[in-house]
Image (cartoon, rainbow, N blue to C red):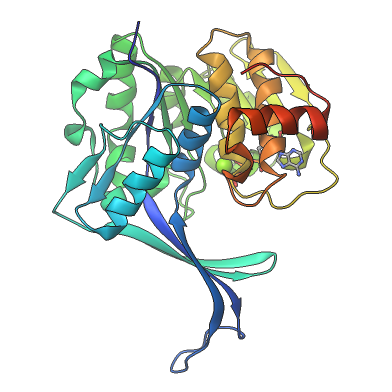
Length: 317
Ligand SMILES: Nc1ncnc2c1ncn2[C@@H]1O[C@H](COP(=O)(O)OP(=O)(O)OP(=O)(O)O)[C@@H](O)[C@H]1O
Ligand SMILES: [Mg+2]
């Protein structure tokens, strides 16, 4: 028996969200925002919070500063049922923050990466690889240390019999420097969204992208927003799964992370790929029924109820 089902390796930061802003920001002037929320940010944190809510034993490996933002991050993860004993607290930098200027449908974000950009494989206690069944790595383009060491981390996990999943997420500098031919053979489940996959493979369409990654993947699931997801197996066979229809979307913030959480929740239980995909589609859809990435995942009871009442699905957690 392993102590954890999943260890998430990823970025951690605080989100400072400003709502109801009087117009666009202008250099040399000052504007009021009528509402402010300070909360746990980071897409990997949404993943970890939601796997924990689904009943998966989840720990987080990430770097925070010894500061107030670091404390907020740690307390928030703990409150969501994520084991925080593996967090790395450093005095070499500050916990990062994203300032979100929220204008209804659109947002302007500015991120200070801080400690998320400082963590590398050398900072991670190698003993943690003996304590988990699975490692999920996310947001590599936001963490230069993890990106640089990605192949070493994946090889080490493989040598320990630990399965892995990878969601690169968006590349903020849009260089898309990702050696998929070397990396993907080491990844058990590759989980990009469609747009990211096209950029990573420098492809004009999905068919071209799939043909390029096919020789290298073990299993790949491509997220396609309200179109659902496409599963591609190592032998090249693919399986499309339509999204669960939500006629009343609150927002889709974190839908991809919630999809990942559902997929991996099933994967670590040894479920077949198609079942993992179907459950990912369901948790992605559940995500859209409440505000933010974790609002719909406050408890097992709440998840089960939403699955039944909104999507007509009976699930056991
Ligand atoms: N409007 C929606 N209605 C129903 N299901 C949805 C909707 N949006 C997303 N989903 C489900 O959630 C999954 C993941 O969403 P999406 O494709 O937006 O991921 P992503 O682009 O990685 O998102 P993120 O911005 O969170 O990283 C989809 O594959 C789909 O199954
Ligand atoms: Mg995503």
